[in-house]
Image 1 (cartoon, rainbow over the protein chains, first blue to last red):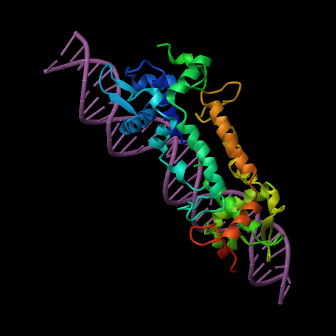
Image 2 (cartoon, chains in turn red, brown, yellow, purple):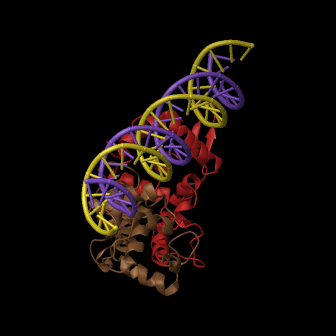
Length: 153
Length: 153
DNA sequence: CTATATTAGGATAAAAGAGTCCAATAAATC
DNA sequence: GATTTATTGGACTCTTTTATCCTAATATAG
């Protein structure tokens, strides 16, 4: 798997937040219901994203989670780095430690190219971009429903 | 991680075999020593590749493992498919089941492009190609040594 | 000040991936 | 045919990831 499950959940949750009115705090419980992700597990993932400054949290009634900056300023890469780290961007395709231009494996060059394609894709895609696409075409963020089911309260 | 550890070991082992005289059976013990992979673990992985018809095995003295067809006819993709399955080529980047053109997630199109780049790289690279590069430039297939250390008996 | 809503964080459990061990089978040689 | 060299395949252990549960801590509203 390219991304860990935690990372995937983090992406879905961030997209959900980016789809809401800017500044509004959304309770984790509501998010976990809508996105069909275990509440406790999602909580831990959001904690990581909060710690990294991508999200902001607020306790107590009317509290919850929201983006810490506008969705068009959040790249998918930000979330991937926050949760999975830079492994994806540094790791050797043949698993050799310290593989790089200085001391490469036979696959290094080709893999570096491919990796750059992945990196570029994650860097050039913002939350807002995907949310707009998702809303316009009513695409999925959960197993079942379209984008719209995220909005009936 | 893009590829499982089993898959990475399978690739390294296949490259090692492709670097040997065509037709020669190499004992797993020797491979595991040279490649610094656990003998028992490597055994299991080679069993998979043998079952898939990529490698061929022979029991008893002078037995071992060899490629079942010339190295230039083995794509990296063959090995990846045999060990990790087609997950990498089919799985949704957001982890949604059944994500495809018919019922996509917001990231589907972009991810499909990136995935094609990965697929292309794995399909357009053969064992022989990497072995030749590895020999010519004495690159690594293990943590420590260069390609050449694979050949002192 | 008290009750309630909500996140924070530690402890634990379940599942999957990675790695080890051992007995069984097959082929070769003497 | 007995012995040795190897692969085969099942059972088991260890580690990491994924998931659950419980107890704080914090903010709001009455």
